[in-house]
Image (tube, rainbow, N blue to C red):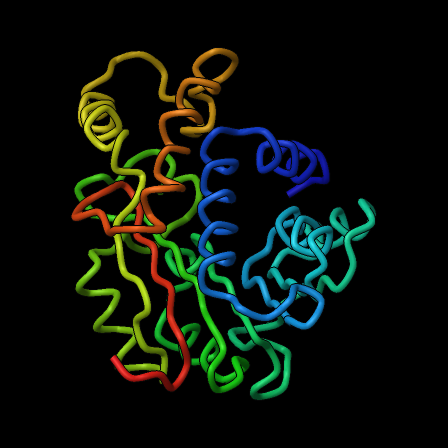
Length: 249
C-alpha cells in the first residue's frame, strides 16, 4: 500500500469516533489496573500500524514499543517522530522473553491466521505479573464490509476467545467483557440491511460517521469508558480482555 493510505489511516486513528472512544477505554483500563508509574512501565503494541497509539503512550511517559508487518506503516510512523517502531518479520515477536510490563493486541488477532501462536508470543514477551489488554471484534453474524477489506480471518465470542487464551498462555482473566454495546443494535441492523443493498458498496465502515455523526457516535460510545471500569457488558460489537500473567483465576 502507498504512503497516502497510512497518512489517511493515521488521521483516522486520531479523529474517528471509534478509535477515539476505544483509546479512552484502553487508557481508563490502564489507569485502573496498572499500578506502576508510566515511566517505569515498558509497553508493547502488537500490530501497531503506523504507531499512533505508541506515540500517545510515549507522550504519557510510557516506554512504548510497537511492531507491524507493514514496512510502509512503520516508516510513516517513524517519519512522524514516533520512536521504538519495528517491522515484524514472520509470526514471531522480535523481543526477548519476559521483556514487557504490558502488552496490547488491539483488534489485531482477527488479522492473524494462527492466532494461537500470536497469543503464545504475547505471553512469552510479557514478564510474570505483567498485564495484557486484548480487543477483538465480536460475533460472526456481524461479519461485514470492514471485515472483508481488513482481511479478517474471524470474529470471536467471549467464551471461545477465553478458551483459546487458556489453552495457549499463562494469562489469567482480570476483566472480560463485551463493549461497544450502546451502539450494538443500530450497527447490527445496519450490517444486516447492507447485505441486501442495491447501491454501490462502501469501501469501509469508516466512511460512515463523518462530521456531526462522528461527534454523536463518539459521545455515545465514550459513555462506556466509565461504565467498563465498574461492570461488564453481556454483549457488544467488540470484546475486551484485561489479563495478568501467572495470576490465579
